[in-house]
Length: 120
Length: 109
Image (cartoon, rainbow over all chains, first blue to last red; front, side, top):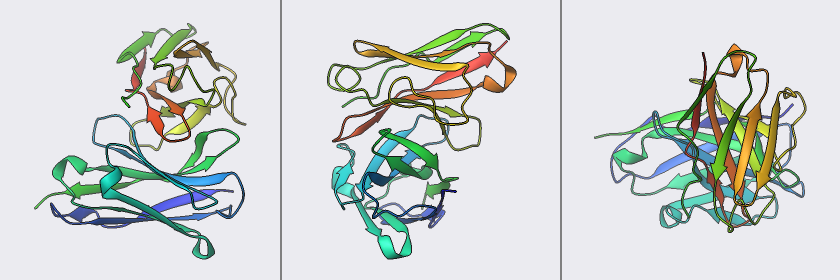
């Protein structure tokens, strides 16, 4: 059974850097064809894809946020970390991590999400 | 790259069929077959219901079906049930990026 869970601060101040950790089980990110992605959703708004890291450590970022994002993986600890710099109140959102499979090209399993509020 | 365009809302009576459209471009939906659909109930994480345009993951009701024509993908829900009332999002994976749709609120009358 595949599960993912996001963890990190619930409140950050403007200009600070956000660090979120996705801890997963039920699969290994060293397995060919797999990946873990991050998606966020501001309150009452649509989903927005942020980043995706593949089994081979290849990385993809949202073009609009590319300069602020960094995604890394620790295969031995089954964790993926997302950092976002220069946080702004408009970045207030629920942040999800999700299991991605090459065979489907989709996020098949999602974490429960974590709400991050940006406020001074 | 802009978000994929979906109607803001679609409604139907129990038992009816409804279709949600998702419009992109030849650079995303029109150029790749990695179109997926997600269902999201209030306060819950999204759930994958369609992948690769028309494939249903294991456990997803056969009442959900997907298709694509040109730059537009569609999700059809047949035999509409109360539990189908939710937000639906399309998505297109294009190797260098992933796009989500603007979302469609489905209301069961």
